[in-house]
Length: 330
Image 1 (cartoon, rainbow, N blue to C red):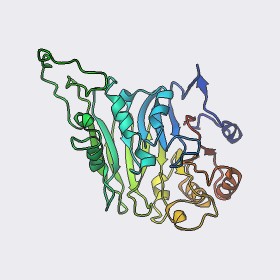
Image 2: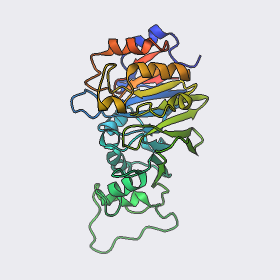
Image 3: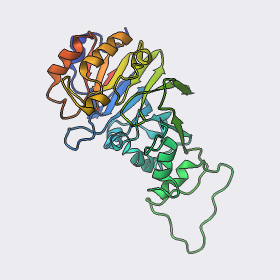
């Protein structure tokens, strides 16, 4: 059995992260999934914006989404930016990506010395793709032009020039000078239309695959992460109009799903999100071992018993209502 918590009653009894010396603790060995942000776009939902961190043998290797507050939770989790193999975004709305600039600003003060792949949906209509998004954010003509150097590799075969006579010393907030570092941000646009699976990234620690999902007119992706014999799927916000999630999530050890609408929701918002009974059907059809409900909004909070009933009418496995900084072992 793969789950660190073997029995369903024991699993469901855990409602807060295990801690050590006052810090969230994910275990020194194995694969762990930590919720950095379990909230949505609301200002009063009690959680940071949607964000998840994958730990492998006590190192944070993958960040999925970076909603508001995620960078502070990353710090609280004790993660090191230098350890990340990649960043992956399910969508590029503010409540999934607003803290990306905070991560990149802070990364200048870390000791990272390798390229950082950043994956997100390609553009459509008014929505920019991942590459254009980063150019608008930290390009030379972007919102934060002092970070533009992060989009280009730094030189590795030149000695730093001595300061000019009378030149002022750079402050801690000034752009960092070029150094013998290979750290730069490398964006990739992943197709967010059609039905084809994308699977063009792997590192010594993990492999990534993505699938377009339907979320109204917004380009959106689901991500599948495979590592050490385990598989996790981060579905993001989506409806099941394309009916692709079952095959994409088949055999996953954890399916992390947005829980934005209650079972009896009506109207346009339901057409962009799964209702709980649909979550249960997909989880059973895909044979997933654990379901994690993230991106929890005010319209679903306080209705956990109704949600549980609707899901468990179709799915008999462990079901977790996510909270910030909880950590679950596989």
